[in-house]
Image (cartoon, rainbow, N blue to C red; front, side):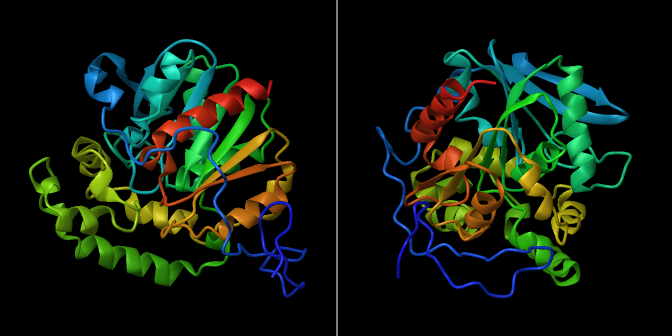
Length: 330
């Protein structure tokens, strides 16, 4: 086995996935990218717990859709987009730090998730992309760095392929959009319905229950590598707004089978791809699909990390994001 310069295993050309016209490579048992500084798991003393977030929240009317939005800090804008079943709180470990470094950090609940009710239109990846663009306009953001995790990365990529002038940089964090393009919608949606119907966490998630290691693993074992090392307060903020989200099943249907593979080549902005080596939600092999299609994309793989690197290893993620924004000009 040999690895090329990107860290992927070279393989012989084979039948390409639907709508793909070039050889496919898969992730090898790749070594994580060495860290350039401290890289602890979790954050024992979170800054976000000392912030009164009520002062930073507002509700936006986006073409008839109510959008719960939060922003903190001043300077170059960074817009964060959460993933499936997520909420703006998924970025709690990042927004205060980026604000302290001189950025305007913005996040919001996608309609149908968190404190944003279902939109008056059918949920779709293009629809969420259009909403993101309108949120930017309403907030008066001219240029920004766009950061998306999981489905949020899918949405960010959808926006970026339209080649808008306002995106200076793109950061895809364990992003959906590669293997999902060839999935069959029916079975995936049926499985999602069963998961929701049988989810024991819909009954109760609070600080007391999160003391139980077993419940932590049930709730986050497939999302985080070591949920027992993440502050209980963050786990509650991750889970509570997401329980029973009205947009969950429609969003699963929207992203499954939606194909933007060929269009990824249109992305011309500097792109950073961040992945957890032990991601059990979106396979690390999907990183190859983005690296191959997006010109000069940089890939950083966090070792001993799951699906949410920004929350599992916030010290390294924040340092990496700051470096990327500082080194790459608009």
